[in-house]
Image (tube, rainbow, N blue to C red; front, side, top):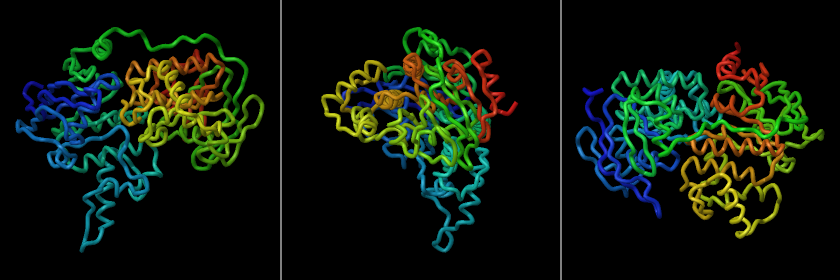
Amino acid sequence: MTDMTIALELKNISKRYPGTLAVDQVNLTIKSGEVHAIIGENGAGKSTLMKIISGTFQDYSGQILLNDAEISLHSPAIAKTNGIAMIHQELCLAQPLSIAENLLAGRLPTRYGLLNRKAMYEEARQLLDIVGLDINPKQAISEISQHEAQLVEIAKALGAEPSILIMDEPTSSLSSEEVNRLFDIIRKLRKTGLTIIYISHHLPEILEIADRVTVMRDGQKVDTLHVKNTTSTKLVEMMLGQTISEISVERKQSPGEIRFQVDQCSRLGFFHDISFHIREGEILGLGGLAGAGRSEIARSLCGIDPLDAGTITLDNEEINTADMRSAMKAGLAYLSEDRKLEGLALQLTAQDNLVSAMQIKNSKFINNDNGREIFKESADQLAIYPPEPNRQIVQFSGGNQQKVLLAKWLATAPEVCILDKPTRGVDIGAKKVIHHAIAQLADQGKCILLISSDLPELVDLSDRIIVMRKGRIIRQMQKQELSEDAVLLAANGE
């Protein structure tokens, strides 16, 4: 590592939002050809720092040196011209357009002044091959899964042939199998000399794939360490400025009688003959590889997508889930896996987002005073920061956005909570808060369906786990059988 040249150097970089110093006098050196991880709690300043490097902000202070030459990165176009590409956690893909059109946006091949579709599809296939994605580039983005879209986003960034690639939570929607494939891609890219800045809350990933790691806290750099010289425990303590107890949560009661029943439910082409039940106060985990059909089941149970067959009952009464409003009125709540695309209205305030589902379920207006009180209770319960009800949700960190999204559904007082990757893209502190909230719901007798690609989370929280593969349930596992290895083997059909 010592013989590597410096690709990027930041000197005294600062960025202020109204009332908040998000990045405070940060000095950072990134070496050519290394995988350099940036970690910290939500709100620590990681994403703001990366947005500065990728040209999103014009109002930062300090110096940025690229290959020893000072440069002002005051627009994404300038950053791109200088070989800097960023893959955002919330994907920047045009849903109605084809994969090929997204991959080559801004540089579509032409012939005689017209779009050369043959060349477009050929180049798109070459980019998809780099990330090991075997899908038709003519498909629309809206027709592919979340994990496939994540790999398309990576392929799109690589198409610009960057010298520095910033990856913000690139594994947040990937299964263990897909993560391993991504790491293989990263190792190959590193061998070509590409510099990768890697942001993740998953410390085992950092220890496996990164060369060095920089820890941030409260907008400041704490330290930069060689990965081989540190541990997960040390990194957590540096992130938080204190030691933290284990994330495992204690449950006050055991599951009771069956409350929620799904019988022979199918959606053609997505899942088939799905039957399961959830007991009073039970957390039922839903495991499987990406593309197994887990999110598709969640969406159909909640009325977003139609069911072609099957019945759903709650407390021995069949319920109507023809649409989401009907499902909500019947007592169901659905926390979607993509908070920015489906879960939150980014330009509304935190308070308006939080009370929006209550208003839909109850069909009544909630005045500002009531809304403020509801927000205050949720902010106290889930440690939402800053506790400012009138702040736009887009101005909150990812972890606090996720807390608002959870609070939005808890405020509807649901009987059945369907949680799709509830801790996606959040730090260890926020994860602990969310885990305790889920356990508390179960202790209140609610039924929880937990979908997660985070195996430690799935195993730790669940009372039982059902495993899916290719749209079907292939195994049910009781608490005493649960382990990460057992769930992963089952998901792979073994």
